[in-house]
Amino acid sequence: MDVLKRVPVREQAPEIRAKNFKEVCYGYNLEEAMEEASRCIQCKNAKCIQGCPVSIDIPGFIKQIRDGNPEEAFRIISNYSALPAVCGRVCPQETQCEERCIRGIKGDPVSIGKLERFAADWARDHQIKPEPPKTKKGKKVAVIGAGPAGLTCAGDLAKFGYDVTIFEALHEPGGVLVYGIPEFRLPKDEVVKQEIDNLRALGVKIETNVIVGKSVTIDELMEEEGFEAVFIGTGAGLPKFMGIPGENANGVFSANEYLTRSNLMKAFDQNYDTPIIAGTRVAVVGGGNVAMDAARTALRLGAQVYIVYRRGEEELPARVEEVHHAKEEGVIFKFLTNPTEILVNDNGWVCGMRCVEMELGEADESGRRRPVEKKDSEFVLELDTVIMALGTSPNPLIAATTKGLNTNRHKCIIADEETGLTSREGVFAGGDAVTGAATVILAMGAGKAAAAGIDKYLSK
Image 1 (tube, rainbow, N blue to C red):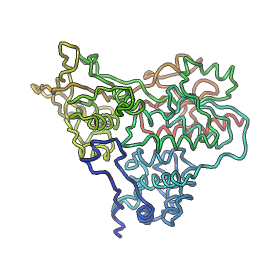
Image 2: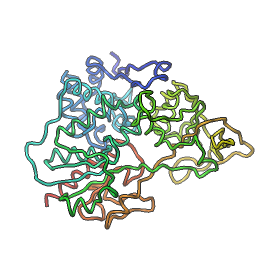
Image 3: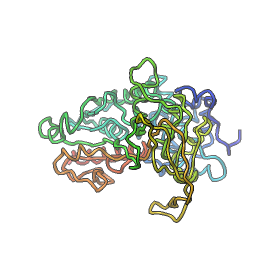
Image 4: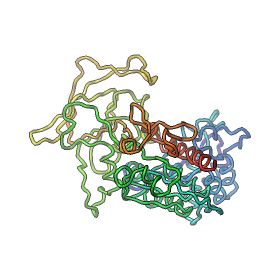
């Protein structure tokens, strides 16, 4: 065994997986997981924990896997995370826990994410559930939104002994986990639903098809229905567009709509009556994880797919693993390219996209070099579908219907970073509704912090 090299993870071959929606990565078996876990040097001052937004005892659970005790590894992880099978698949470990791994100084860092996934999958396969609280506090807390922040907050509050109800606007709980991340990265029935069932086993109640702000307001929940605290974890589902000519044409989607139709409404499955215009030549504008997800989805639906990104490859915000998989599967990357107009035929449908080439100039406020248009570099991509994956912002409905709830100029709810407390007494918030679009694990970290803040607030 070469301790400097991580144990490789088995995957579907690119030419096969590009034509199906089955999970790309197979994960470790017990033997592979134990071998990878043995690479951990069990640091006393574990820097990997400092890189984890929910502060999992990483050396602790890895040691249990190394010793052949995956159930105990799952128990340890469950003390910190409500969604370990999710995090093991979609968290950017390479820029968090694994980036700080001491083993990575002279070799590959320990594959912490894949080991977390293994422990969670093993527990699911062996029907191991987290243990419900032994005592109840007799106090009701409402959680708005069943995405990563809301699910995490609800799970921690349930463990503390609170009576927790989640109110979800859609017909399925899970938020971005079910509508945003494709099946080939995060299986819905096998993984997401099972994680949510674990929360129900803790006593969490979930009410779907409830649009807080229309069906019921936060004021009504607190003043009429007896909830003593509320957590807002409604995410950031309002898509952004470029404002260029032609964006209202048929065949132009936000990534949110495209992925929601495909994931939550199963438009890729012929047995479901939720059609989607798959397109034969598709451009996805953007360079984040959502752009990769949309591009790889369109590819599986039979299209030739371009990623159009105005900066270079080094500036791509998407995970390295997702970019690598997209390239393997045949997605074509058009770097240093910026759309200026979507071309429309006489029937009102997309027929192309006018673009210009870019070059990188001085750094902007984000620290990245600002793209500048090259002179006389205009060209046209022939297309029939354009997907805009330019980020999202929070829906303003909650703030507009809740007394005393302050927001910033980006329509994000203002909340304390450590406790999640907002300007409204008893109302807490976290995740994308506060920060704008970010990662699953950061939303979970905010949900966890808010649960502790609510517990402290209600324990006064």
